[in-house]
Image 1 (tube, rainbow, N blue to C red):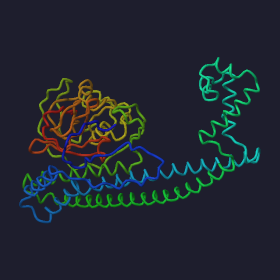
Image 2 (image 1 turned 135 degrees about the vertical axis):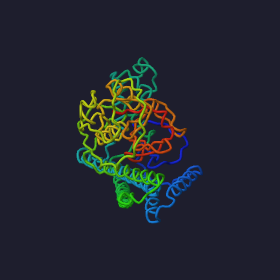
Image 3 (image 1 turned 90 degrees about the vertical axis):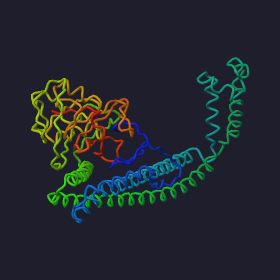
Image 4 (image 1 turned 90 degrees about the horizontal axis):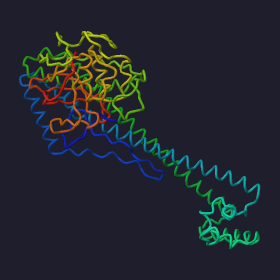
Length: 474
């Protein structure tokens, strides 16, 4: 139900933050856990310092104003926004737990109030001294005598171990009646359940008073937690708005950059910010795909996918791939965006496999994002490409070009259990799929990707050993 990967020790990269799922609920009075501070390891700290130093060196000779804009946007991408996302998620989880606890206590209060109403009605009918516990045990004795539940109550009522023994001890109806009465009294006393209705009514009223106080306290706690969660979300949005302003400023000043290293650094920083902006749009969109069956990568259609991210910045040129495709497509034009209309069933000389749009892919999964992003770039993509690891073979069968050379817009396929730079491993059952956003000068690729294992949808990361993966092109 995530992008399906197994993590090892890994520095935090971009927007990929660990997420906690499946919290158990309860009815005890427990305060919602406070968000824990994220402990940054030495390797993570060193990686951040190294990345910052590399970025500064790439910006040598750039005007201080533009360099500061790039560095500030990079800090928002890599540090401030991820921390704010983590804080907002923790606050939201705490609010949901507090609300759940308050609702559970309210339900218990309502049940106690109903018990009180029922008991008051019984008192009106048969009086306050009627002993329900004794009557219940006596009924068990009667049922056992008539064979309805002998094995359960023979020993309890008469110390009998067999039906014959029980019958021998019950030679007459009078004996049965005496046994019922004595057994009921002894059992009720021994189990501490003998309480007349007046006493039980008092106990219920006392419990109602306690539950009312508890429910009021928990409702107040839930309201406070919800307020804190809202504040965290507002703070996160403020940072994202700041990132948008800085990204737009950067885009307007890119022409001032003269060195290739500075241009690449600016492109990477801007693209990371753009990917987070898509995540924000997705979360705010009521038209995003919703599928309750998130335990699989590919699901049947729900006809509910309608999401169009904002246009991406112009991609950097990519190297020409080696065409070792077994599917037979040739003469490919590697400029993007492509020229396949959204939802095309036939494009670039082959069947795209697009029959129901992206509705066949579960919400937030890597497969859904790959479909959405490819569609945005006007590149062909199918509705039933399978799990992440299946995309290469499915694409070959449909006639797509598939090889080991990345280019912008290609679907990057991670095999089942494939190790990625020693940092994480693609899920052994589903694999993973992402979309190439940029091919960097050092041969690494910047990718966007989905998956509920990420804090955001989409997320991003840079993969260094790009030649180890398969890429679905046109």
